[in-house]
Image (cartoon, rainbow, N blue to C red; front, side):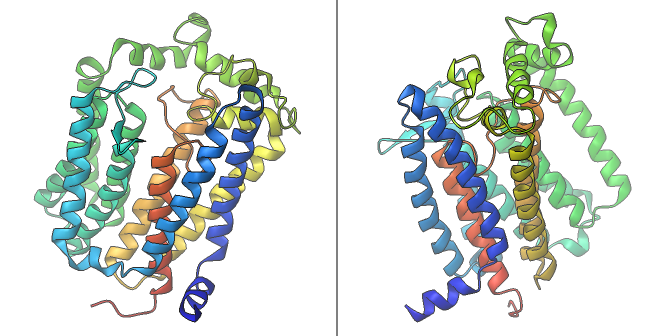
Length: 368
């Protein structure tokens, strides 16, 4: 018991405070939604939060250096995540038009969330051993292949938003590994070619309509632009103080699609307004600052790169989600970390946070 209490006291409580605040704000929105539709999302999210905290504590106590030392462990974790993504394609269990889920032991699991964490760990491991030789194109290509395999499988679901997040994680880790400018330019050219190919040969027509409707949603207000218009109405109608808990008409009257997941920010902003949104933004910024700070005080390259990758995950996913809810980015369908409903996302995010806390606690310890 003394060990547990001593361990908990060494946590970064500013980081945890930001996470708990985000989770609380998400639960408020889910509670509001459950009040009008008898939705089980609120109760389920509390359950997944409890499960996630167990995983958080486990990873904060276990020796994270196994990820830095054991290549076999890291690669097996990555392979398992890729196999699960492949199983998703074969199972074809469609929810909301996308085959992104598996049913394991009576629970619905979204393997892409596992893939995000496994990619961060793999890239941190890969570049921590090769940071001096990062100038070699072969290393850049190999790391790109590690990212491309899960990203392509995710695109085939199709899940454009999560594929963009995987690419963002890779770009962030590569840049902070010391990549040269000419290699970065080459990377941008390759990315442009891949984006062109993805647009013409991978994206479905309805996904293309989402992008084109983003440019002018009112050109097709009952079709491709419907979701964006309703989301913008919800965010704008919140004004300064919001309509209050339980009084969000866009979500409660079912004008806003998927208010508990893809559009939870719009649901929250309608009920809590600009002031409430500012609190949410502040919590996200505080969380990102503390994550980057953990990487800054770490003594080994794996810990630094892992922190960068995890920060890129939180930032890119939050940026895409809030951007599409406010009508400044295309609708891609992605959750807001720690806020949106989703057991897979919440458990994996808290697990990754546990590794960060472990790194923070052992930051001043020499890593062999």
